[in-house]
Image 1 (cartoon, rainbow, N blue to C red):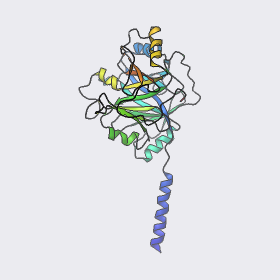
Image 2: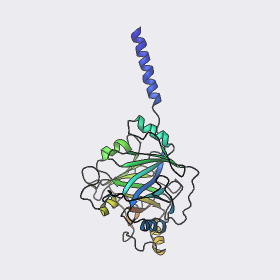
Image 3: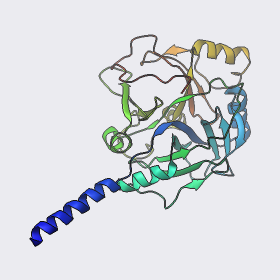
Image 4: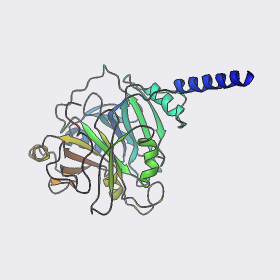
Length: 309
């Protein structure tokens, strides 16, 4: 009789533990990319005049600056740390419907999280964790009342972020297995070698791109240059037509004294693109929403982002 009671109690406790597991809040897209600057004036000109973003106070760091493209997406620019070396990337960030819910969800999955979320000066809520390779990742709950008007922006939707990754399988344990990111596309400069792996956020179509061209090891490769690392660490803004976007920048004199590619091109994924680089070498890629040619290496396995998202 005692054994039956014990089994019943054990089953009841196990069921209660299962019920108590918090659900993952929705991850609704990219929030921002945070980068360092060694020349704040040059960086301000780049993001306000060339890109057309609106300069605003940084909601997370009073020493930083926010360059906003829309109500919920921006580039955060921070002072260059003394020990930065060639690194110019501080963190990537994703929007979620509940920062506190996401913090509790990750904690329940055994991930190291802060004791509480932080509140931004703009009314947003956020917290940061480290991914399996030590990259800093933030989850931001935007303030729904925050409004941004950026009429001169070359685009208003950051459709993807990318950064140097060494071990695809290791990173997948966090982004795919825990967070639920969805496969989108993979490819490389040559079909037999995978250089880029794209996975979309679970509840929208923005994506994260693993840049696998960084060699073996952990952290920033010892022999990589600032210029090469800036190619890997990047953000992308969606375009109806990259050719039109390029023409807008060129005719407006916005490409003078800016490092860019010589012309627009079709990427290996079949989408039009044009690359610009901020004063410290972080790449910004204008990219068409949809492919106009057959992609190399793999087919797309999910819907493309759209301007309305």
